[in-house]
Length: 112
Length: 116
Image (cartoon, rainbow over all chains, first blue to last red; front, side, top):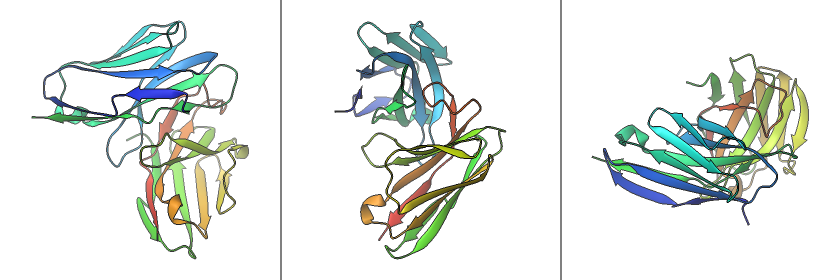
C-alpha cells in the first residue's frame, strides 16, 4: 500500500472556479510535504514545501495546508485558469530515511 | 525552464537495442537523480549521484546502467529492455548534499521511452 494517497484521481472544473485536492499520508516520522505541478510532457515543478511545523503555505493562487496530527494535506487552487490543467503530485519526505514518498497525483482539467 | 535538460525527448527501441538517455543540469548542483514514471503509479527513484558518486540504487535491474562523468551530466544506458520498461524517465538535480528527503529537486522534461 502506497504511503501517500491522493484524491480525487481526476477532476474537471470550469475556468474561474476554485478547487481543493487532497493528500493523506502514513509516512512517520515526517519531515516535510511538497506539492508539485506536472504539465503534460514536462517534469514536475515544485509549488510549495512545508515542514512538519508549518500548517499553510501559499504560492500565488495555490495554497497548501497541512495537518500533521491527522496526516492530511490539501492544495487549494483559487480562480482556476486553463493553464492550471496538469497533474498535481503530493510528495512526503520522511525524517529518518533518505527517500521520498510520491502520490500518484490528481489530474486536473480546467475547461472554458 | 528548470535548468535541467534531457535528450532525447522521445525514444522508441526494440528489446535487443542499446541506447542511452542523457541529462544535463545548468544549475551548479551537486546531486543528480534518475526516476521512472509509469502511468497511474508513483514516481520511482532509480539512482542517486552525489558529487559524481552513486549513493542510492533502489534495486534497479542491471539492464539499466547509470553513468555520472561529472556533476553536470548524468546518463542512463539501456540494453535488452522489456516492454514493461516503457515509461517516462525523469532526471532531477538538487543543490544540497543529496539528502533526498529534504533537498529541493529540479526536474527535467523527461524522456518518453517505448520498448517494442
